[in-house]
Amino acid sequence: MPAVVSAQVSVQQEPFDVSAELKAIAGGRHDIGAVASFVGLVRDLADAKLSSMTLEHYPGMTEKALIEIVEQAKQRWELLGVRVIHRYGRLAPGDAIVLVLVAGSHRGEAFAACEFIMDFLKTRAPFWKKEETPAGGRWVDARDADDAATARWKA
Image (cartoon, rainbow, N blue to C red; front, side):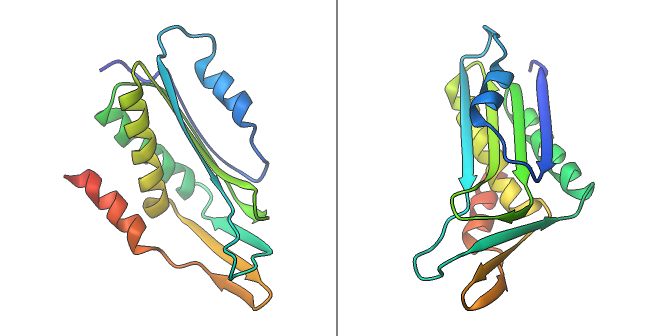
């Protein structure tokens, strides 16, 4: 398998520019045939009336977990570039939380690796979410559906 030419992981408070990140990962290269992307947004479920979500993380440990997830993806697929950005701090409904970009020679590998990275990020990266609503604050529990999505990659 060819080595990943670029693999970057960032945990940051600042918003990210999807267009700039896409341009950076492709970088005028002609060996990239596909870039798969995922952008996660803060959503307001109609019944919750979410005013904000605060994401906390464990500095150093979070980046290490994300790097390990990217390394696992590199072992499964022939990737030409990976970019993962995850935000923390106080975010409002509609704000972007996470970006995963995966570049490859072919779309199938890029799509699969992007989904793999996102599934493992949801269950393995040490982030904690607290939702603020008119009823008060509440910590968001892990979801069984996220664990099920991660389990399917073990087969």
